Amino acid sequence: MEDLRIGVIGLGLRLSLALAAHRPGRGSVVAALCDADPAVLKRAAERFDQPYLTEDHRELLDRDDLDAVLVVTPDDTHERLAIDCLEAGKAVYLEKPMHITVEGCDNILRAARRTGTRLYVGHNMRHMGVVRLMRDIIQKGVIGEPKAVWVRHFVSYGGDYYFKDWHAERARTTGLLLQKAAHDLDVIHWLAGGYTTRVNAFGDLVVYGGLPRRAPGAPKPDGWLKEFDWPPAARKDLNHVVDVEDLSVMNMRLDNGVIAAYQQCHFTPDYNRSYTVIGDAGRLENDGDQVKVWNRGPTGYRADGDISYKVPEAKGSHGGSDERIVREFCRFVRDGGVTDTSPVAARMSVAAGYMATMSLRDGGRPYDIPALDPELIAYFDRGQAATAALARPKP
Image (cartoon, rainbow, N blue to C red):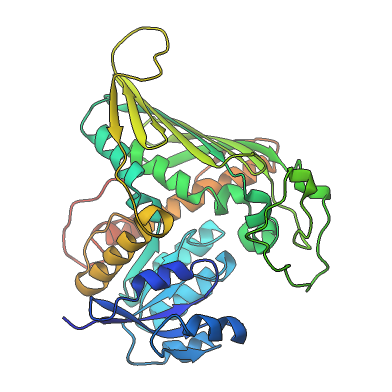
């Protein structure tokens, strides 16, 4: 089996994904790199085996020796770059979130169907051991039928990761209830087996709005991702524009009746994602390296639960999910078919986060999720095949 030849557009924080894809002699090789910053391009090239280098993604797409492209650039560029890749006939991996608007997502989906080029969206949390374990427990009926999902997301590094660069700008992300929450919203849909149809949300910029910022065009200081400031109000050198919320909560009604809630805070001392899924015969929670289940009762609170499941050990970036998601992407490029990650599911997570952000900025007024063209849904549920009849996957 010859190695797939992969190009990479964008060499920032997700360079780890490109490194996971570079497996010469084992199925895939990174053969071309593109970044607008020549210094970044030169440094990244040293991690690979003499790849083709360019600062213009169109030159990369003109190459006939590439099978697929990883697009791992800032969110607001995804629509343009993804459509360019699809129209060039290059299978494309698009990093989450799919785009910063519902319209942008739908334009990408339409381009994939129009061109017949394979599109894959990288919601790597579907490949994390803890998420797959929770889904397996739910599908086995251990807690009955899911009725509620609650997620609390404590982002201790939020002031550094998200408020010192482009993530802090509405024009580049819409908001962190979309950009940062897209993973969790997708997991909520996957665990609950449905998509959000209505949302409302509240939130504000309560800590980072008045802190010192860099001048426009000023470079980020050395060590900005290694030397974290504490307490939150001590942070400085923030992005010159800071207009996204650092605290938010949203409520969701799914199309199967499940009620869900998501909470996000970017100034906590600790980092943690806490999932609770309540079924009609029990509930589960993730707790460190365990998933605990309570399915006997009624009783008072019991910290140990009734059943405890060990989360599989993971090696590699993003809890081992980067390596697994690259394997799935390469298999998809070669063979097609349905994948655990889904462009439709990716669109629905963006739609939930986008409309929740609109609600948040409109005093919490409920917003409905725009419907997606049923023909597009059918196309992607068939594994992006024109006529093959495959069973529709759950979210």
